[in-house]
Length: 292
Image (tube, rainbow, N blue to C red; front, side):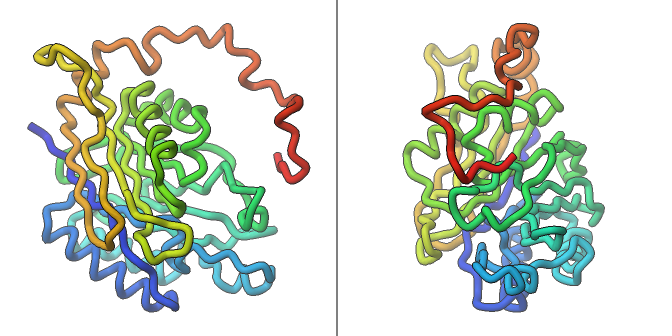
């Protein structure tokens, strides 16, 4: 049985990027010792999800994908033989982006994703949104896993996970920084169920402003022939405390399920979904701060 162990690093940031680098390295090593195949950070780890109002200060906190902060996790992934999903405020013009980079167990960068659905009703109006969703073949100690990513608010749009499913994602990583309450957890449960995919969400713990822990994992497998009723797809829900929470995804079970069940792309009728890509927005959904 192939078990993919994803360590959700539900940890508090420090007051500086240097502290976050050192703590991030320490917790990746702890995750490897605990048997992790992949370690995932909460959203924008390099600065602890801080979005200053001052544009120059904001840009000063942003770093490139080739920065020493990011390259340190590239080297660490190779050293530990463990994939790492590191998050950061990325330098970009005209404004920074909210980004996750995924390194495989050899330290190869296989995916870089920037948040598409920025929270433009709040501080993220000062960020540049990403352009697309991506899937990569991630080399792990348990073999190749088709892996995608979405970030926090992305999960509230069914299109995000749908596109990742259509691109072949088996597991989707979800860095997060907000209160994970019953309705947001229900969104994740729905995304996993309707797309027959695994979702692993890493949030900040209690103590981080506007966060409450409850990192979670849903394996997307609702039905098994040996069970008379549907099963709970939630395989992990953390409490609010800081720590490493390990989500164990049964890859063989997920792949077999995807081969014969009715969800995902099995019975869709995309030729009838024209309204989904229409750009017109009508009342009551018009918002003055909406950005394309």
